[in-house]
Image 1 (tube, rainbow, N blue to C red):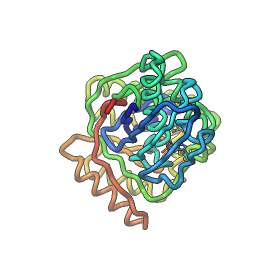
Image 2 (image 1 turned 90 degrees about the horizontal axis):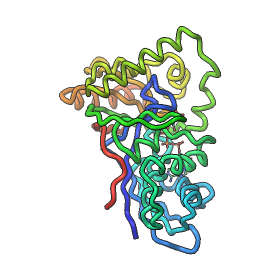
Image 3 (image 1 turned 90 degrees about the vertical axis):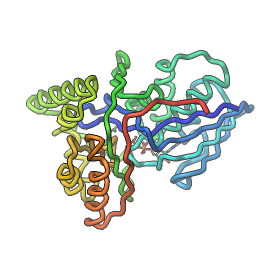
Length: 291
Ligand SMILES: Nc1ncnc2c1ncn2[C@@H]1O[C@H](COP(=O)(O)OP(=O)(O)OP(=O)(O)O)[C@@H](O)[C@H]1O
Ligand SMILES: N[C@@H](CCO)C(=O)O
């Protein structure tokens, strides 16, 4: 039996659509695997009633197939599905690391990223790896078709998860087909600013670099109260605010001293629009770990 914990993650960070991601130090999924003639799956924990146990429909089933590693897989969900916190990726990442060990496949962490991304293809239609990369490797990750770069950054974050569901598949449908050159120029500038901020662990630069005028405005329409929550987080001291992944979670970057006030301001702002929300005071954390 091998047990692996893989963290929630936040993809995009505004300017890095389908490229940037960070591992969060909480919440997390825990996955246990043991060898079996064919793959079977048991799911417990947060939102488990909405997660299929058929290996053809669960992210971990695709991972087991890609590694040719049939197993009985138990998933204890800490990350609610359709949260924007990389729920499907947390299970896939943990399963990839665990099955690689169980079957002694000898793949490196970076080699496991595209394997775990096969799981993402099962749920959202394509194998984007901006959640599985940080879930496996930890820190801030830049995932491109030509490779993955990682930065060990120390940034305080608040993620606020409203009690509404936005599936990644639906949120990808509202992404515009193209962008104006002016928007492209702004996005490149913001992405470069954010990356520099991560290298320096500087919340001001990271926050400024989270601005995005291409994908985020279209997706904000899917999240009741988004603009009020964003404004409340800024008023409480956030240095940057955007949608986490495909939503509905909202993520704020900040100084550690402001984290508590931002957390309660975001929950209150959702509450005022009639939406209950839970909040995580968190930070950039490590990738998958053995237990
Ligand atoms: N092991 C799994 N864990 C969570 N969700 C899973 C899993 N396997 C399949 N799913 C399905 O994936 C969907 C949730 O994935 P989705 O990508 O929409 O959300 P997310 O991973 O929380 O969001 P994001 O990728 O934006 O951070 C649900 O329909 C769920 O049933
Ligand atoms: N980059 C992906 C992350 C969600 O899985 C998206 O925003 O659609």
